[in-house]
Length: 396
Ligand SMILES: *Cc1c(COP(=O)(O)O)cnc(C)c1O
Image (tube, rainbow, N blue to C red; front, side, top):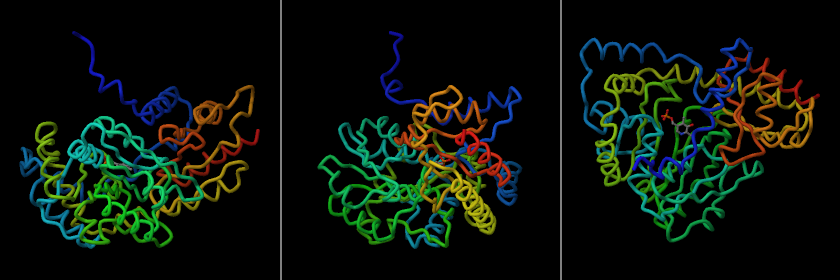
């Protein structure tokens, strides 16, 4: 039988990648498109990190390592959690995977049985529902509004929890909204998880990109009880501009980490040895490059917000972290501009791309049709050029 497995049918392809391909095709035709689609920093990986990888190659560090990460990197991760988050782990509570995406996939594979429920909010990162589906579990999506900063309230979570709840996913700062959970709300969410005995998956990949003087606090840091049931997910992609190196990691309950390691041992084995060496350098080296990039993102955040303030009928929640803004364009939906009717976020995406030559990501892939995501991981010049075009296109 040459039929394919239902597994592949059940998951949607990444809409972000499809639109990125469309934008790139236009560029290849010589069309000048301003791109706000990027899900990654636009900076180069810092030199001291690249040099560590080159040294690893020259020294012949090019063979298999331990499946769940080499001891030197696990020690560096243990040290990072202590230094940045006040969290004490043993190396056996840490796994290194091929990106934070892979580590979240492994977590869900390790904890979910058919029928289990996983709670997270909309707007969500596009991969959460698909990874839950691939683990045969059910997504329980809590709708959030701009008024609540796109953060689930403890009350919403409390009423969504059932005896099938396996985990709650928290992503703060968030992709696609850039919003950050309030510390007091996080503390209450931790209490709910402890009370109902469900795991917390805390995706902290944007931890280092916070603005307005905010400081990151991991939900795992409130008590020993919550730490024991929390998976703290992080990686080097966003903080060190290392998306292509594919190194992410999780610290969490030892039994679950060991199950994740068994699963990983039969799929990818260890993440690339050379990239692991680079990650050691990233985590243990001078952290000045991280702060330099953060400052650049904050300046861009300020610029893009200021430009959106000049556009009628578009509202937004000011991002407090990450490098995305997620404005509500729905006041323009249903309009007919230049003979073209704007239907939902896909219609707006197409109008902005084909008429204004600006590439943005529609919010429906994140469960939020009123919104479109713009990444400000691009230069101030491009931000200004793109926002001029958007303003012009919507004022017609
Ligand atoms: C980018 C991103 C990740 C994954 O990054 P990796 O490159 O796989 O380490 C995880 N979660 C969110 C919310 C992201 O935006």
